[in-house]
Every structure is written in structure tokens, then in C-alpha cells.
Length: 516
Image (cartoon, rainbow, N blue to C red; front, side, top):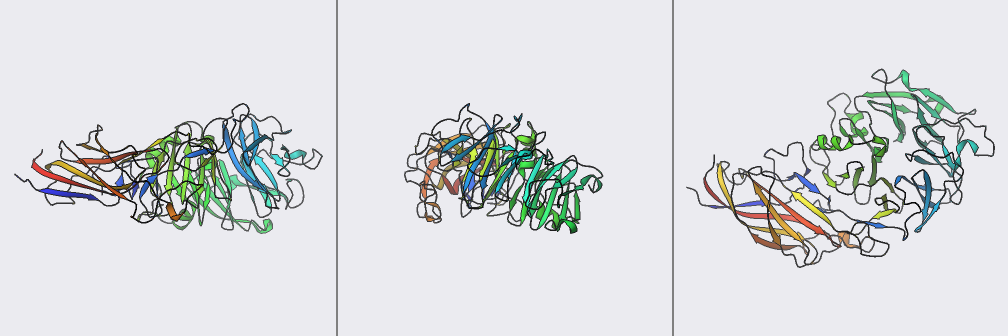
């Protein structure tokens, strides 16, 4: 009977991202079947996500749950953060939060979509009059009241964008646009397009509108319409109708470089890819996690789905508050098949807004607005009193057929493990393993003693992350036991003020008898 020891090496655990579609299969070891509270660092290792820190000291009056967030920037460059929740609107400036609901018709929902337009800020949501903010020191008013006379024609659009000197909105299968540099839909060069005549499937429902690479994009639930010459409405024309890749959540749409990313009923899509591939089978950048992603999207109202793009850290995140989970997609290192590396977070903001100061703001706790920073959840301003959270990585089922020929049906008896990683000194970190498709893991503690270093060579918001060299990584070891035919391994690390990063896992496995 064979008795040799065989090394099992996973040189970059989880570097392909999460794969829930084939989690029960034998997969290459680069995949992960669980990847909670993880990101991919600047050289592609799995690492702890950042935490959140509240940006103001006292809870907002009435402890509202924020549902919409936006950075309003006027023509002088002054900016404020705008948040909507519990049928009111607030602004936040340097940690001071003020009610600026003003004289608007009392809202009955908080699904506002805000847009900056010619020095002003406008807001739209279904079933409500548009609202208007003239400058950063004012309160909101109904848009029809702007200018002192309630005579302007307005449309209660469900979505809006500001582009090419106009505000654009969609309502009842009509695309409306304002007069040039004037927030009025009456007279001048204002006008509309009848979407119902051009949906490629015959009829659809408008969900979102967005400018993209010199084009104006109207998303239906089941299709997409693409218009050119939106900067010259007299010559504006439909150039493409794409069927079968519509948008199911308005606030999932994010412009990312040359791509426009959005959630469809077949997964996360890129409009840039869809346009290119329209004559061929469409790619799906979330195909390895599609079923689980869409299952989360199906819980509650699509109005509650929020997203953000973080260009500095290189990721797109989409939050499903009704499911209590967000999905993280890395943009720095796409997989060879065109998909994006994915992970999940137990952080599920009800609103998010990325600012020109490279801060991702989010609403996590009712009554507070927070920033994505540090390595504790919901710490107070300038404090380290937040909650710890778990990084939880599980690899794939491995029969070791890639390590040695003919061992797939033999018993595996792991003897020891060596983990190369970076963690806070004395942080609670453990190696876990299980056999033969069991969900019950055995664990062994890993005793890291070094503190983590700095990402990109600098501290972010005064909190360190990781270096891009292996100089600060530490190898820790543990003894293992028990046996089975196929093995799954993983790491659980408590993030409690310092991050964790994983570089390599090495195991020594004894090969035993035939196991059938």
C-alpha cells in the first residue's frame, strides 16, 4: 500500500475569486467556494476588506435609514454630500449634518436619483415631483417652483441623468430632455422620444438612463437603447437596440472607464462588452457566481439595490440590504475568461456615494453616515471602538490528482500545514479543513506574531494595509489529523483593527489505501 508523503501547494489561494456555480465539483485550486469579507490587494492576494467609520459624532435626528446618497458639486468646486432617508433630505459637510428637505412636496419614499446640472442639483424618483437645489447653502424646493413661478412643465421621472447641457428623465416609455442649460421641459429646445416605438422586443419598461462615451443609454428591464448625437438633439438618433440584456435595478448602473456595468436578470453585465459581442454569445462577467448573485437580487424591492465604483481600490460593489450582503467585484485583475473576481461582504449599505476626494461614503447604521476605511466596522469618529469581522476563505474540493498521478481514489491523511500570510500580532486566525463533501470543518490555530505593513507604501486614512513585497509576511505552522478521499481547506481570520492577507498554503499529505 502506498505510504509516500506528497506536498499539496496552493501558491495563491482564491486568486481566481469565488465560484459558487461549481462549488461541489473538483476545481483548480485557484478558485474559492467561500470568500467572505475579502478583497484582492494590489498584487492579487485575498485580503481583508476595509471597515467603516462614522463621519459625524451624533446620530441624525430621528435616526433615519438613508436610501440615497450623492455628492453635489457646484461650479466653484464647492461640494456637499446629500442623503435621503425617512422622507427627508440632509446635507453633510465636514461631519455636520443638516436637514435641507425645505419646501418640497412631502416625499413618500427615499429612492431619489440626484444629478448635478449647470451649477444646481436635481432629484427624481417614481411618483414624485422633481426637486431642485440651487446652491450648497440652500434647501430643496419642488423643481416646478424654481424661478419663483409654478409654471414650468415637469415630469415625475423614475430616473435621471445630467449630460450634454440637459437633464434627461424617463417616464411611461418616454425619454424627456430639458431645454439647454435650463431645467424646464417646456419650450426652447426641450423635447422627448417615444421609447415604445423602438424597444427591440416590441415593448419594455424603462429603468435607467445614463450617458456613456458620447452616447445616451436608456435601459429597459429586458433591453437597451443606444442614442448618438445627444449633444445635438436635432440630429439625435437611435443607433442600436440590444435585446436580452436589460437592467433590473436602476442604481446598479456604474460608469467604469470604457464600460457601463449594470445588473441584468442574467447576472452582472458590461455594456461595452455587450455592444462588442452583440453578434456573438454574450459574455457574463459574473458567470461563476450568477445563481447566488441573482438569488440575493430577488429578495425585496429592486429599488433597495445600491452600487458604487471605487477607482482607487479598483472594485465595483453592489449591495443587497434586504439580503444583508454585498457582492464585491475586483477590476484590477480580470480572469482570463473575461469574468471578474468576486467575493461577498456581510456589510450591506442602504446607500453609497463615491466622492471626488476618493472616499466611498455609505449608510450602514440608521442615523449615521460612514466612510469605507480602517479595519473595524462602524467605529466612532477618530476612535477605534468598532466591531471586528471575519475574513472567511474556503478553497475547492481537491483529490490531489494534480499533485500526483493515480491518487484520486486513495485515502489522504494530512500531517501538517504551513501558511504564509500577514496578520496583526496575536490576531485570532485559524486553518480549517474537511473531507469528502462534509460541511463540518476541523480547525487548528495559527499563531501570527508580526503586525501588518502598509499597502502601496502609504497609510490610507491613517490606517495601514499591506505592502507589495513579501518582506513582512510570516510563515506559521500547525499539525493536522483525520483522513478522507477529497480535501477542502480554508482560513478564518478575525479582522480587529489590522488586516489579514494570504499568500500561500503548503500541506504535507500522506497517501493511504484505496478508498472507494
